[in-house]
Image (cartoon, rainbow, N blue to C red):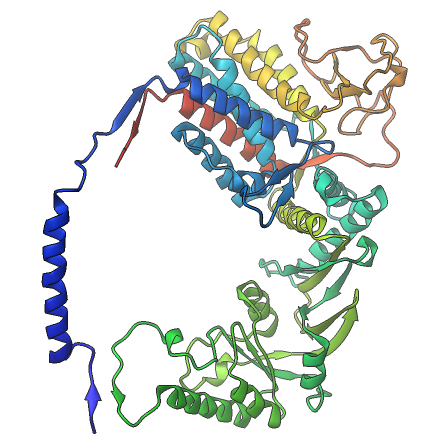
Length: 600
């Protein structure tokens, strides 16, 4: 037997020669290397004109994308290829490349928020930009601004969490109305989805139905199931559907070949799930020193090991083999001849729902398989849905479902898919905290009215703790309120007039070019969130007008409620987190004294 080792004597000689040559070349080129540059230190980053312009551009991008009538953005690399059309912060922020460190901090903070909460990313970005820009124009010490701003943030959060807050609703799970409103608000705020009113209502129903299916029925079970979105391009939105189990799209000829002899009539389908490649490639076995005999083919040896594994699977009476990656054609043929169905290229996204629904443990090696790794399915079927062929895996675990999501073109389908994932996530967050905030700008204007009123009645002890004067406190509170109102104002893109009522602090919008008499608001249909309809006794003032401060109250018993319950609602947890991220990031930016950049 002759064996070869990578670090034998012959290879050592070549390695030594290569090192000597590289050393000589390095000494020759050492004189051409540049000296290390000193770090670039700049003081007062907020005074930079470049930052001011960049912050203004970023703010304009976020503002123009906000709300149901937000303008769409084309994102591309300037050299052709794929073009992303979106108005969602999660997609926009990943596509925006900025050079200034301050903007990198802002984008990183909002991106981290959207990765945890999925929603209210535009709200956080607009609010943060507004705070930074407004605070630059006031004559108050930065340290006082930071302290007062954080105090105002705590006041807002305490108010939103208190029983006295009248801009939030309790989500009752014995009715689907609030859940429908939350899902509908997400979908209708993404114009690139290109949904009609009926389509948005239909998809919202599917999202809520899928969410309810993922909630376990058994008491004591605290793990939610999974709703897997299966996109189908080129079909009508109304062909979308929700099905129990998992759908795996496959070409018709493959399904015909799989089911030619493998028809499962039993109610129990034994399943093995592999998370590694079964293609037989050596590169999939990790890094190691490999000893190979001169007369042995490594590929043939690996294939023989795969066939031995297949024999064990057949002897263990496994009916279905699922592989995250690729299966060797010979292995597939061998399993097929022994009436074992083999499905490959499932992808990483399918691992968690498959593990949950089958009870199988992902197999990550080619060694003999423990029987404890096998799982079970109730049935395997072939489904023809929306002109596509699917393998339908059904298990006894009813918390796994598939959302067949259709749309007319790829651009609208991608945006709708992102919106549906966001809607699913906020419904899951609502289980932990069953609250919702009034949307449509009403929460922002309500909080602005609340802060203006509270700033006129600040206890002396609070001013002493903050080490500031009452005028300074009122200036910062006014800027904070204006920033909240600027977020609400960002919802209007067509030149309409924005108003707020002086009793509840809700936002009202008048169509552009429509005659408006604030004393006779008959032309106003309803407030931004849809909770209140038009009423003759409304007392309205232009948004941002510094009228007499008032304590906003809940007057729902005095006014006619919207009978259709088509409310605009925001996720409580996502909105509160977005507010905290915006204020804390703005405070961090205001507190920056130097920016140190490594130039090497």
